[in-house]
Length: 233
Figure (cartoon, rainbow, N blue to C red):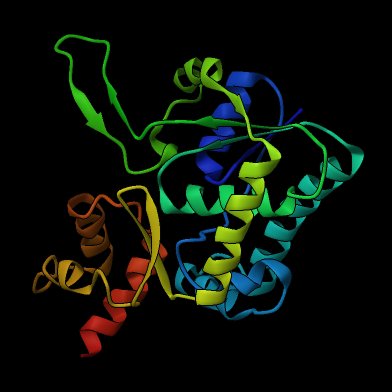
């Protein structure tokens, strides 16, 4: 069985907890043209590479394609696939994409949906709302293995059609609202981001402030890009 996640940090922790490899596909599907998964567009990789300043667009694209290649090879072998996901838009969209990839194969597909909220076990008990699966400890997340369910062909087909609609819409940004993934304008979060800008504060400070006050799981590199636009306006 191959385990798939759409958050690289969570994947690393989960691999240690399971004591087996986990493919962490950091696809960032809430942002940008979804055609990049099929090589139809390179604009996204260029944008991310420029804002992150760590890798070239080619290196980013190759890393993702390597992970997708591992997944496709497992599917071609007939291996069972287990996907871990949440209500974060990256995860919901990743689950749709995976269902589209597997809608015409007989491989077993199992899903483990991990909540983005929890009550701590210590004293005092605190209710926590998490931004993404990256905030889950891999060992703690193993408790959700008991909730794993198969994804039947009918559900794969339905979610495959939803994925096709998301690709066709080609929204610049996507959010999850009441369990639905919606395409929104690129400036959807701008007013809330602008509210955290302070005079004489660095970009790094402002990004930290935005991510803390706007806990919706936005990539820090994308916030950097929006701050650049806002500072020019």
